[in-house]
Amino acid sequence: MKYAARIENLSKDYVLSGETVHALRGVSFDVPQGDYISIMGPSGSGKSTLLNLLGCLDRPTGGRFWLGDDDVSQLSDNALSEIRASRIGFIFQSYNLIPALTVVENIGVPLYYRGHVRTTDRQRCIDIAKQVGLGDRLGHRPAQLSGGQQQRVAIARSLVNNPRFILADEPTGNLDSATTLEILELLGQLNNEGRTILLVTHEDEVAAHTKRSIILRDGWIKSDKRRVEME
Image (tube, rainbow, N blue to C red):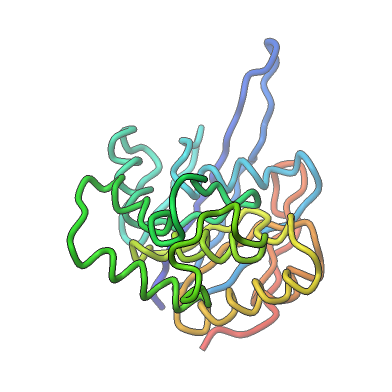
């Protein structure tokens, strides 16, 4: 079986007001390529810390993290930045779109971070916009879009570099129930096409759409249960 990521005894400590906080206490799990995982847990359980480590936004205090076959747990800031730009897609609760840019331009933002933009990239952005149902909104700016449409832009942006996996941080947190279902159906479709997705949520109804749920508590994995078997 091929793995998008493997996490071995990952820990993260912070020092706050002179005291050490153990945000993660030796977390281990594998992410098979094509998996769809929800990460759950109460506030302070370590969800955000884990997501930051998986997204190469921070380094662990201990343990190892492989992205594909590469151990990225101790890489330099520059190397981590390159990995974020080329191999991981991010979807945020607040969308994080640039107000002055159009749909197509927002989708293409990760390409600029890679330091090169080709003439074919605009067409790729247009194609991805159409894939997520925004073919009639290409020239619109975020203020002209609904919340669900903005999140579709964010999803399209996460796909533009063809990442190894997608990290979604409460992607439906700002959406109503009907729009939430639309976004979950889109994520499910992407997963069915072979995309690996890790989704942080506090809602059981959202987690029910994933293949597997990992529940954190006090920096430990409380449970790791699979709903749908991998093919």
